Image 1 (cartoon, rainbow, N blue to C red):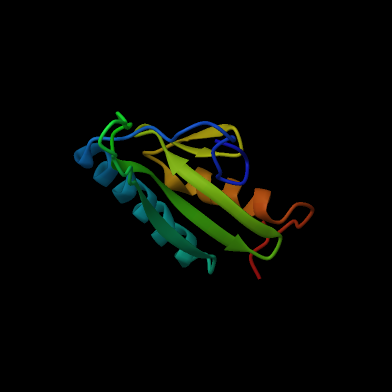
Image 2 (tube, rainbow, N blue to C red; image 1 turned 90 degrees about the horizontal axis):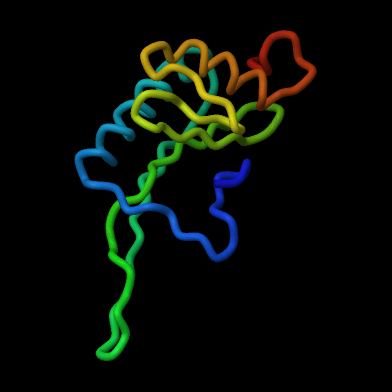
Length: 120
């Protein structure tokens, strides 16, 4: 996945088991609440890949893909995903057990150059 949260051209996001997608969404929801406590808006997006099948075409499977947390801060929008054990942000990993480190990083990355982490 690229910095903007998009998959590179020609690549497909991995299909996750429903339980795994739900677990990752729950982790991101905790991060969303921690961001809200600092006054940072974010939106949790659950994604589902839908593949239409034809009679003679064997298609890739449909199913839930990685949920994403879109973080809106004064310096820009960042996309955070979760691996189950860590939050992934801009190529960096932050422990899922401590969302405060990921919150600080999301604020810092979203507003480079601001000493307050970009939170007004």
